[in-house]
Every structure is written in C-alpha cells, then in structure tokens.
Length: 63
Image (cartoon, rainbow, N blue to C red; front, side, top):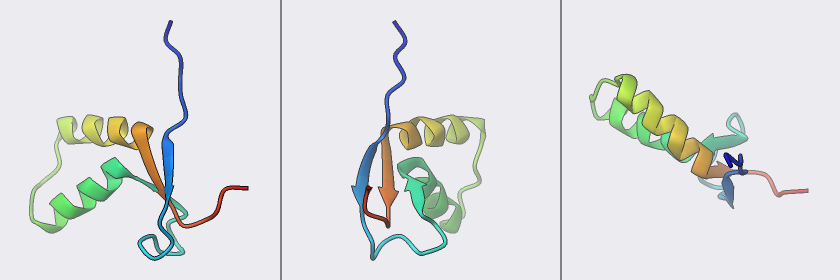
C-alpha cells in the first residue's frame, strides 16, 4: 500500500511573504543553503521534494 498523504501545514504569517502563499520545508532549506553559497545537486532536489511533502509553511488560514 502506497498511500499518498497531505503534508502537515504550519501557519506562519510573518515568516512567509505575500508572494509565497505556501512554501515547503525543502524549499526553505534550499534557499538558505544557496544563500550560503552551497550549489544544489540532484540529491538536494530529491531531499527538497521529500521535505516539501512532509511540511508546508503557509501565510493563509485554512478554510
């Protein structure tokens, strides 16, 4: 059984800009490491996708 689940959502209105309605944990880590000068690789993309499927930050309230 390979059941697809929804990522856990955390509302952080001051942390997420209006341009980014939802941003995954993997995307946050990718931005930080890129800013620090670490170049992304294929493994980084897979890690980001996996982390994004686990946790998403949101600026909006769930309806």
